Length: 363
Image 1 (cartoon, rainbow, N blue to C red):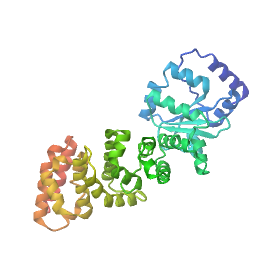
Image 2 (image 1 turned 90 degrees about the vertical axis):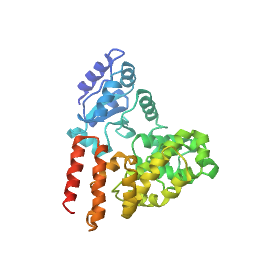
Image 3 (image 1 turned 120 degrees about the vertical axis):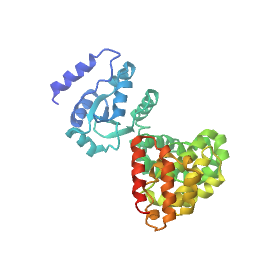
Image 4 (image 1 turned 30 degrees about the vertical axis):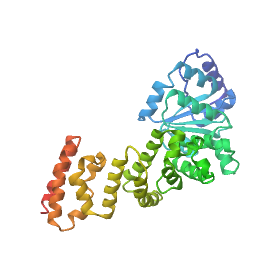
């Protein structure tokens, strides 16, 4: 972009009426940096694709609002980047985009300052943008302090929140567990440190941080509320129970979690406990090929299993088919007949019926 184009672009944006929507430019990163230097503004970049539904929601519900437009147009060089174009692929090489939409705040020198991933409601989105605009609370600044060992206590929470809102789940896990390990026992159950739990998606029952939550459930409930703690307990347990074929390092955490979960589930009360306890018993029986337990659950508790677990029943038990036990196979086929009413679509019902019809040929 030459100087004349920059001047014309600046004049055009200056002439936008108050109350206009966000004025996105479809230019390359290099052109955006040139414009940012000329206008002495940082860059706000919306990284999206034409097929991204959440991107369209943000465009329609947030960026079209006059008050949002006034805010962004006054403070940023706003760039709309289609990540499937050559320019978008260059941005991806430089900054890395893991999901859509991703929003970058970039300095006029072309350095990444802040990252937000995913659609948000207006108030929360604007809060995250304002956080990223300030160098002292931007993710890049806090990350550099943490890696240098100079993160102050008051900066830990915005750092973890920033990582979470950038969908940097593995990084959040490492940082949260390290920060938790550095807390005294009395500090670990304070409401002021619940942010470690609230922002860590990759938390597992095998982690010391989660074991502390189980052991001090009542104290945490007093600190942040019973429903919040119950939701976190159930969410962590169910995350493990939904995972069928994890790869390392997740597999190691899942395997260790199955060792820890029976005692944890028995020790703590929460509304979803009956579901979690049954699901855990079922998954452990599947992992151990414990047919006695499997048939007990199929024949007596089939309707209590989660839907996606029900859907998998016809397809994941070759050890029953290959056992040579005809009576066991008959019982399995009978489970298939009882399974049909729980299937939510005609296509699934037909697939289940066809699968068990195949099994009947083995009798």
